[in-house]
Length: 239
Image: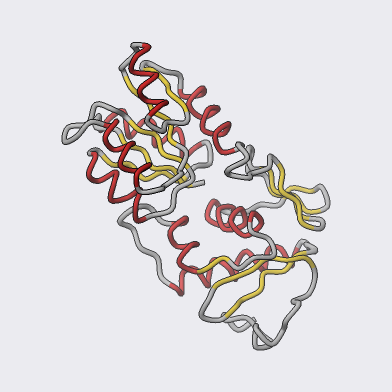
């Protein structure tokens, strides 16, 4: 899951980012409202954590502009403004949740996970495909009930593919979810990552397959490829 953190206190932003990373989130952190708008309107995020006291513009304006752009990303406001009128304004402006500083990181993580479980995000606690299961809370992957060891990026890729099982996930979408704001990946790095994940799934006899659709992206499904012609009879990485 990829989160946009908007917090002008650099030390607090680093602390939050580190805690969210340890909880399994990929986090992009920005310090100003204009940066937040540029990121939110041009990148794909699963949720946004938004401070209201920003140096260049009010966080409430950021929220309203995001909603005016028809962007439905879940927004959790995290602010020192604790008046009831502020909470009401935030929720009426499009916030999905409102937390007041000081706060417990554990509660922030729990609230983010609750937002991501809402129907609009359609994220089930445990995703299954044939004998493969992925727990979106613990980020544990199991095949036939046995846990398999995956790297962090492999877990991120698996999560994206299993959430969209039976549908094409484009390389651009994978790149946006895998790499932080301002960081770039390459088509080759994505192919190498897919290759490694595919090999691990095969070595553990997973009843799923990752299909390569050349020039487009990837798709995870049960069993053998439904249309081997699209794969050209082999994977883009030569497998």
